[in-house]
Amino acid sequence: MSEGDPMNEQQPDLSRAYKVLSLTAIATFLVSLDTSIVVVAKNTIQADLGHPNLLTWVFSGYSIAYAAGLLTAGRFADVNGRKRSFLRGLALFSIGSVLCGLAPSAALLIVARLIQAMGGAQLTPASLALVLPEFPVEKRTVAIGIWGAVGGLAAAAGPSAGGLLVDVLNWRWLFFINVPFCIFTLIVGSRILHESKDPTATKNVDLVGTALGFPGVALVTLSIVQSGDWGWADSRTLGALFGGLVLLALFVKRCSSVADPLLDLSLLKLPFVVAANLSGLFFSIGFLGMWLLNTQWLQAIWHYSPAKSGLAIAPGPITAALLAAPMGRVAVKWGHARVLMVGSILLSFGTVMFSITIQPEPNYVTGLLPWMILTGAGVGCSMSTLSAAASAFLPPSRFAMGSALNTTMRQVGSALGAALAGSMVVSTTRIIQTAVMTKTPPMFTEAAFHDYDMAWRTMAAIYLFAGLVMMTLFRKPTDDQMKAAGQVSFVD
Image (cartoon, rainbow, N blue to C red):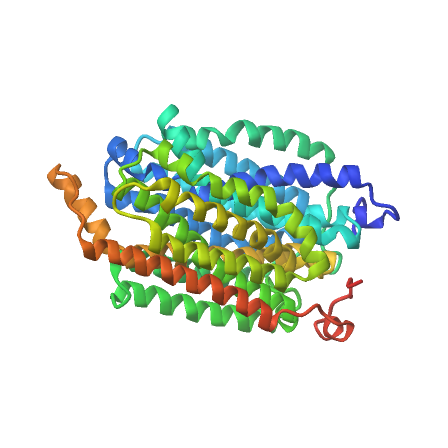
């Protein structure tokens, strides 16, 4: 351990540990919030800046840059210092937020969103690596659960918060709202956070691996995000997907042949890492797909304003927030896989019920509200559990890398969920676009409503599959498995 690393202390100070957790959670919340907060403001931003086709990149560009930067950022944090990476990432995210709020055109708004995303990618894996050494081993799963729940709940709360900000103020405050929280976290973080590094790492980061991994993830995510607009058979989609997969294959080969790889492939020898990352991928597909479907239905079919649609889905994030921390503690006692399975069942059932009970004419109390609460409970069971399952048993030297891998998988899953949801309700999107161009009310058909039913049921099936993956593959690591992976066991 490096000098000043809290792991050197015999008796960790839990008061200080929770201060560090709270501080890093602020930054994690803001980064995750900005993945979804702009969803409800697309039409408002379009009316102000124009260029509807270009503005799709306000959401897509953030997702691509964030996913692409995570893997390399985890290793940079291990080598150059977690505190330094966290504060630099937060500063960059803050600058990007200011530039987003001031952007006079769609093109500059997209550039500012890319800056935001790169800052977020830099701080996210460093934040967990700063938190976990502060906690004793027996408290670490709960700490990860809280950290993961904060990010997940922020993504869920994004449409609600965004709707209120757009209606009460204007769309620029979606980004300005970050700034005071960033400044507070920067000031306090520079004072209380301890610097730490991976003591086994050399000073040199594998730049060849970076040159392969960053564009590889970016191209795969690009093909997924743009598949709805380009089509899966389009040469651009296939070219980006093929190029990304080739680069990622070369990246894996590079990681297997260098002394200090960007991604330690020995992590993939641990069943809990594989299970949590696969399950997280599928869970994120269903999660973002469901939220986008619900938000679009409220605004396009029921004609809710951004603020009203935000308030309509708020019971879900509220329920999730109430359950996240308690379910994290339950997962320690009952088992991560079992708790996630419960969450998957609740999410799957609630999402199927959307397709059964929601009507073209608004029926919020009977058609949406009960299932928003039920799916919120499912999110509360799942978000903290997934994050804890992916990292709880790793040694401190692999915290940042493990967090980066898990967040990358979930971000790619979110991109897949958005693309899948968009492709399944493409008829609705075309009806809305035609109505905007002709300045006439949208005329929805039975086929459009059927598309939503099928999309909700598809997301429900994906949720259930995520739970089954965990139940089938997840196992607490044995000492032999940890040794085979080249790790030091921290399992009780």
